Amino acid sequence: MKPLLILALVGMSSFALADEAQPVSSQPVAQQYDYTMNLDIKRVINLSTIPNVCEVVPATMTYEDHQGQVHTIQYRAMGEGCQQG
Image 1 (cartoon, one colour):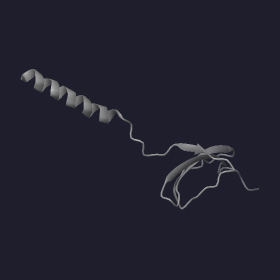
Image 2: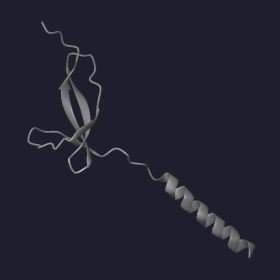
Image 3: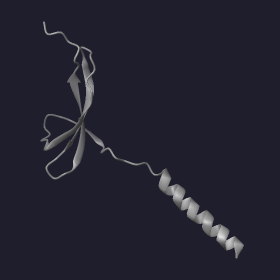
Image 4: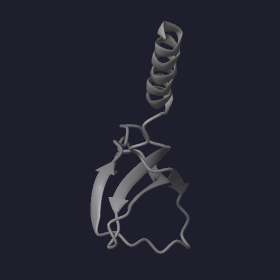
């Protein structure tokens, strides 16, 4: 009887570890933006910080569409470090 109990406990503990090993994906997969995309933006959730450099840098935006789905796009933006002058 004890071997069956031990076997059951080992089996249950391996299921518990399997649940912990799965990565939690809270962020949607980012799409590369291009000018042909029609974006349905209801609410902007997050914008990446644009660095203080004078060059084109990668940026991301996470937003919610009108159906409640969350999307993340990657795009290129001009840095904030260029002087206006």
